[in-house]
Image (cartoon, rainbow, N blue to C red; front, top):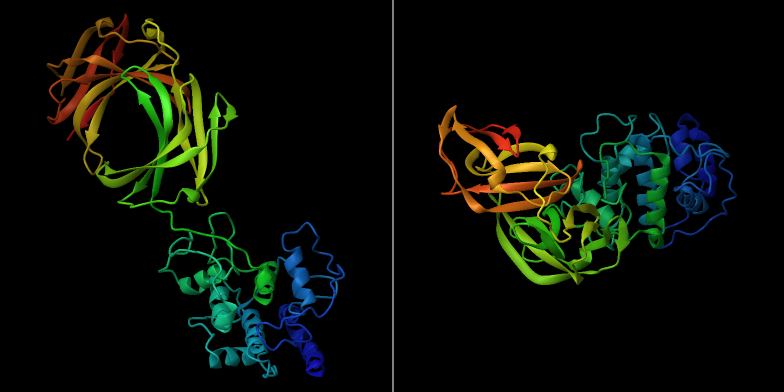
Length: 452
């Protein structure tokens, strides 16, 4: 066998990439008998110990599975052709099934591997060229079909459609998921992205082969289908004027979700006025199914170990599975005074409405006065010369006596809004609505809104 391989290496001068992938000896005869054949002596000048692919290349060299493009160069960034992948897959298949086949190259050099792949069921269909760069999805399909089931035992939980760029209806999805579940593929990032259409580099194929040959190198990852996650927000106690406490967070999901796993939520970081504080979150038994914006949703409630009542600005970040999320900042108020909102800080006046399934306005419910900064109070008696029109004609209106105050944080900083709710259910008649008037001597005109 060794004599044959020495002769084989002289032939490989016609295809340097393939020569670099197929070593001088394939002595292993079963999936459990890949053994170290030599010691890596740091001969490749184009890789260093700080490279993420150093260990896989070292292992592949020591197992005599992948060589360099020369005695001193590995070319980790070089891309591999379909022909090179078929040659490598043929050799791996031969090793795993006893190593009884001898490959003799002819013209073209890769025909023997094409024929072998076809005969053994791992020549995928639709290949337009054997010399072009292999796509990552094609490599996954070829290798999965070439390896025996004993080499692909699942060690990971990877749910269907969990990979963000490989859904189960995608080409070769089954083969890709098989390699993820076996720990041979782990993705390019925390979400498990695979980049199926990208070409594959020598450094990447070395990593894959190292994990195939040595199951101890396979990585444990869990990727769940988390598409149902919608958003998370603080669960607060508030009256119509101020927020007084934070109980925990509410995590919302699309659709009717019967349960979630608290262990899927990690890396909670709670901040108070820019400083991290320790207050663990615990998943409660409370679940609320409902509708939001004409969509069915499910809310799950996490409670802080200690209820938050200290005034200040709070924010929270975390992860659900591999997906990071941010809870919008909220402010717990200090005791309110009686100072009315400063007219100089009035930024806008606008209507609040309910929309239909297409987000078209169908009911005006309130008018909101937004101020910059923290404002204490708003008195309806400070509004004068109020006029509301529909299509330019004045219409009658009246407010409920309560004024609702919203102290919020957005990308412009802190703002305070005061909402006045219309009596009798608001307005639903078609037309363009506008309100004008003065607030403590400052004239304003609301933004217009049209109900079709």
